Length: 193
Image (cartoon, rainbow, N blue to C red):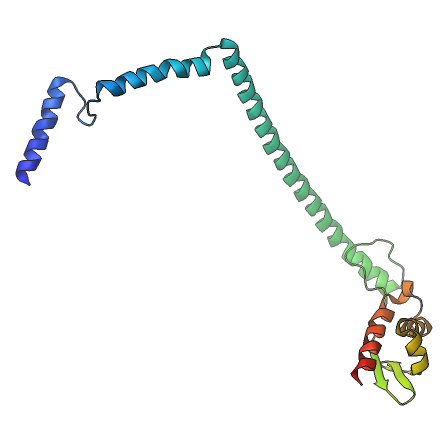
């Protein structure tokens, strides 16, 4: 190993004395010719025409302006979103005590905010199959108990379900889509036996 290091060191010293860089190897004359031939072609493609260089420079400038404008627009969007969030939080902070006071005094609160409540209160239907038909009742309201005959159910289960919900809960605008849920449960109970 010592001899190998010695030879390498001698070779580097010899290259330095000749004026060559020690890391760069001398290239063959053929490679140098190819590089020289490629240089004029690159000049023709890039800047042989002065007008082409000017147009390219103008395009690059406009591209940079476009990218800057997009960055500024994104920054403005984020600032606007932050501004809106702070305004919403301030509104909610002031609205809560006002609503509480309205509720305490029994006055109607004219300001809206937050999620609106459900259209109608949640109800559960109790269903039972009898000899004459289906016994239907709203849970917790025994006065709503009804027996819907099988003849009516054979004509249309949906119509029977909607008639029951309209009678005891009110129209669809008030009660929501409770008739559809009741109709599905009625159909399922009829198919079971």
